[in-house]
Length: 178
Image (cartoon, rainbow, N blue to C red; front, side):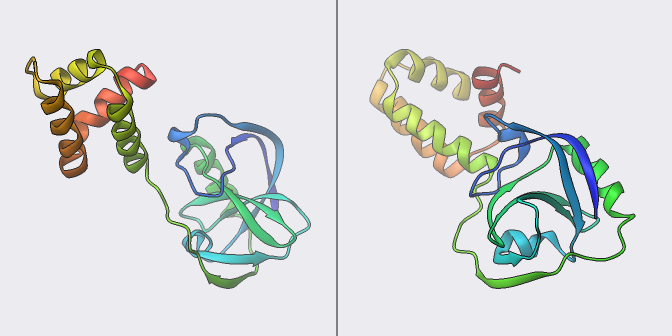
């Protein structure tokens, strides 16, 4: 085991990629352990025998931070690309692996950034006023619409059936400011 210093993490009951974080918590010192395969941890309910509550586990390819309470992994956090790269360097120097016990298959579903954005759009369209619908419709189609009901229905159907890069770009432009 080694330690990693000065890292921001966002613990949730679902694994969320760091670029979708809305907030984070700073940790000054977190122990790093080597495991056989990180995907086993993400896909199963597991038990880990460790004295630490917050740990980072890595398999040499990917890394994830875990919050462990009474041996049960309760919360997960991804790492930023820069931090993950440094952790993978550290874990390459660790010889023994942290033993984990698979308790059962996870009943949680991993929700990707694209699915979160798609769901946010659907909610926003259903709740928005005419000016947002018109702007959104224009940005997605390049046409000025006059029938609000048609524009809403078109956008909802297009988002559900044809979610693509244009929606992600619009999200970055409007909601993130890139």
